[in-house]
Image 1 (cartoon, rainbow, N blue to C red):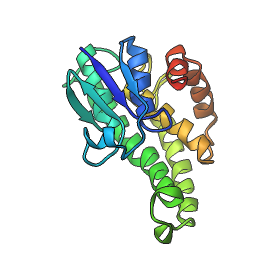
Image 2 (tube, rainbow, N blue to C red; image 1 turned 90 degrees about the vertical axis):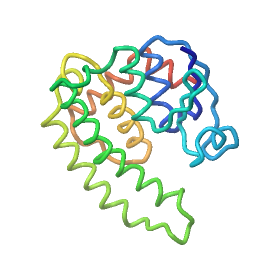
Image 3 (cartoon, rainbow, N blue to C red; image 1 turned 90 degrees about the horizontal axis):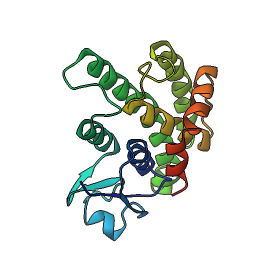
Length: 195
């Protein structure tokens, strides 16, 4: 299986690069920015990441992560199991409550045309983000989101917490601060971030 990842580690492509590093799979990396010619050729929306797997482009970081996990039988629970249903529920929670708040803040910081940006929205997003942290801590296992084994939601959560820190969204729960430090110390994470 030949893999090529398009996107920089400053984007959601970091999730895919880290996943491939965790799986120990060889891949090529094209650090193309969103809406660049090479990205638009593979994804008409111009969004990154794009994973090209044996010549076929796959878009959306979560879809790519779950594809890789299922394809290689790692970092996931098997489809059709109750554990997989719980895993998918946590993935959706993180996308709805963490990723969406951070993405909305980014849109109103530098993505939308300036006349459409509303900086005041960021305060309500920070409030929601902090509340969502309390909910997550009540749901998550130890030492990983699902418990004993690292799974796809761990990659999404860690990426969101790194993003939050950069965007000055407080990571208020001590358990998440400790979790983030542990995840950032993983050799595969460090290799991914050096790209």
